[in-house]
Length: 213
Image (tube, rainbow, N blue to C red):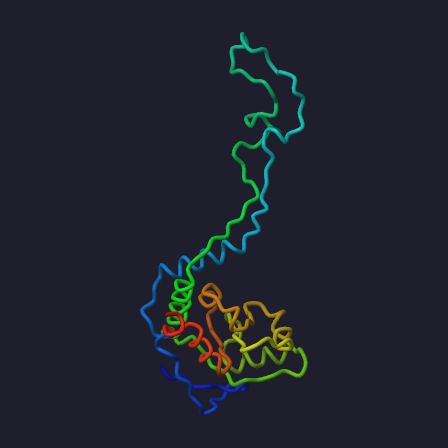
């Protein structure tokens, strides 16, 4: 699949790049996408939720009613979960939600997500550019020129660029990452995927069937 390469002013540069069909044109696997997104969201959870159990509640240990003869159930402590202020029965405790997936499955999920973006014609290839200083106004102008202003944008850089990152940091619905940070969730969450020229070839090297075999 061939797509045009654009300049930051929105004009067609006249160059074209070929998207590798083994990465951008496969039969998408929805279950692989589901598992990879589920892992991504689970790994982001802090898992610091905590409620007090019965043994952690500070209450008198005096028996509140006599064992027999009250006509009600037997109770030995106000720490029981059925009382207001008592401990939480089977409440949440700190834990890790992380789980592992096979590398090949994660690669399949990313290829599937990229294929969906290619099918939706939501991939734009941009000529390499730099910014002398962080300037949000200039970054917004680039988005306007590419007709993606106001949309969810994922800009993938070949390497970290501090000025580009700082220029986009305060803009809602815009995320700037490097190739190494590319993940299934961010690809699907974005309405438009913007790749700096050369990134598509690097992605093919990382996710191609030859590399993952």
